[in-house]
Amino acid sequence: MKENQKINSSGGISFTGLLQIVFITLKLLKVIEWSWVWVLSPTWIGAIVFILALTIGLILSA
Image (tube, rainbow, N blue to C red; front, side):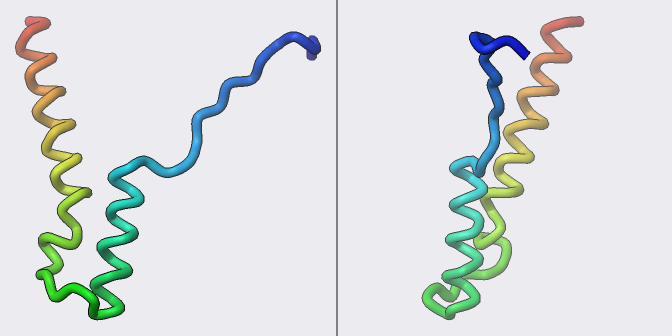
């Protein structure tokens, strides 16, 4: 491998992933008394945004 060749790797946790971990931790430690629907909201809100973007992209490309 050449010395000047860069290796780009993207890894780590996203903001929503971190938020999800924080909400679950707070729920399990009984700091918050939210229902599990709201504790898991970063996951399902992210999924809804992704599905909406995919649907809009498919509609516009047709």
